[in-house]
Image 1: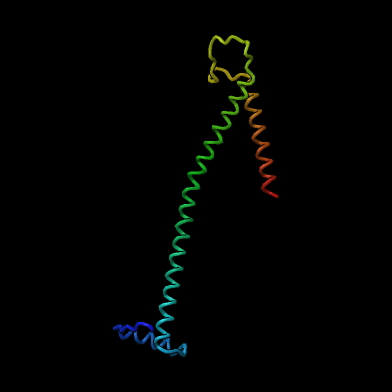
Image 2: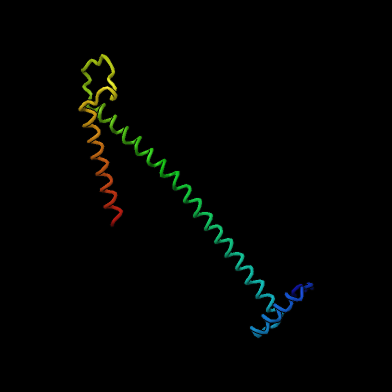
Length: 134
């Protein structure tokens, strides 16, 4: 058995329910049930839309940070690869007396290592573009 409740309604609310009932050719109780159901659906849709909007805004903010991190990581990876290329090219039998930094002179080996890494990265990019275009 359904539990019965009594409510006190304003004149405007009562008229709205009556008009809705007449327009839809249904009883006042059924009219009120439909109005409440529609209201709860609208509320649910509003919550869903709010969550979607919030997720989109958070995504935009995170994307900015992740792009900065990705670019920094790529630069660090490139520099690490250049160092590895240089170390590969060092002759273990040479007696290094002093450290010559790249500020003083950029030796041919550094230029070759940078070119090798640049060519390798371009190859990776090209393969990645081809893979993603399929």
